Amino acid sequence: MKTECRIFKGSARYERERPGGHVLRIEPEGLSEEDGHPVFVIREDDWEGEVRPSTKYGCDFQLELYAGPK
Image (cartoon, rainbow, N blue to C red; front, side):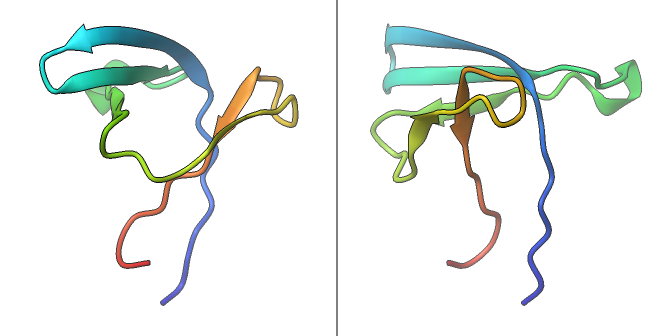
């Protein structure tokens, strides 16, 4: 299976005590109206990845998300 790397930069907001647990809501920047304004919603209870400090892409934090089977 071929993996492809895509970089999304955006603004994130941590929301506490929502139904279903805490969430990190990420709104990517630079997307057009045609893209439908996607938002990544990471549920703390379901998230198995890492959120780590990083300035590699000009951001404060970095997440790595994978689609498909591990």
